Structure formats: C-alpha cells, structure tokens
Image 1 (cartoon, one colour):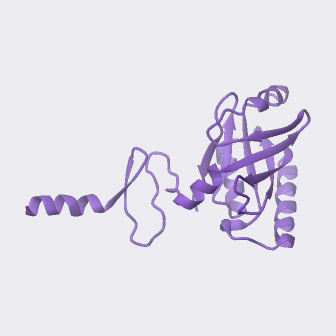
Image 2 (cartoon, one colour):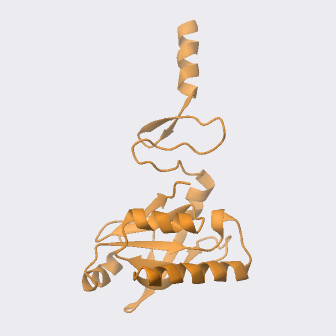
Image 3 (cartoon, one colour):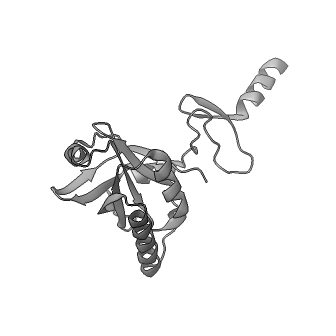
Length: 178
C-alpha cells in the first residue's frame, strides 16, 4: 500500500501535454513541453483561439483561416511570392487583456512599422471569434516568415500565440514562450 501511495504521489508531480510528461509547476506558471518547448496552453485560451476565424484580405479576395484546417486558399499567393510559410499575428490586446481602442491602434501601427522595416510581405486581416464574446482583433497575415521570427514578433507585442502555416498544410496554433 505504501508503494502504491508513493507512485501516486510521484505521478502528481507531473502533468501531461500531448505525449510529453512535464513536471507540474507549483508557481502556477504553465509548464513547458520538453519536446516542443511550447507553453502548456490554458484551456480557456485554447478554446477561444480554436473557435476563431482568421480573415485576411489578399489580392484575390478575403480568405478565412481556421486552426487545424488546410489553408489551400493561400497556396497561389505563396507560389507567386516564392515562399512556403505564413503567420497570422496581432498586436492587439496584449496578454489577452482587453486594451483601449487607442492602445490597440498604436500597437498595430508599431507592428506594421516593424513588418515594413523587415521588408516582409503582409496583408491586413482580423480574427473574429465564433461566439463574438471577444472584440474583433485587427491583425496581419505575413508571408514568408519563419516560425522563430513569428514567435519573436508576437512576444514583442505581448501575444500568447500565433497562427502559423506552411504550403498546403493545416494552420497551427503555436504558443509563444514568455
């Protein structure tokens, strides 16, 4: 019986993130998955991100992107620009805390300046939650950006995650390490 109690106690020291076993965090800071090096997602945030459509206004028209679904509508523009990846990033509402409209506009202008300075190809967009419980967030679809740069930009603007994709592959939600 004592052996069983010890095993149960040892198991409580860990949490599971997909196939990863990570040590539980007594501080309440989400643990990191050792394989993906991503933050373990907050269930409410995860639900909000996955219940959102990410719209981008590209030259051929408005496209809707969903996490877990292939972004086939982007294939032509990726080919035209000779790039294989994209990211959808906002600067609004840092740390998922509603910010005043003026602050969101300021952050968005700063993000656009950064994209211009880096000479990245980008298009305006917006994330709209299915339940409309959260305000629409102006964003940018950025072409040819690699995952590390997308994470770095999102971190600069206090974001928890980005939507990232590659040619002919499903859109992924990628958590930003703090």
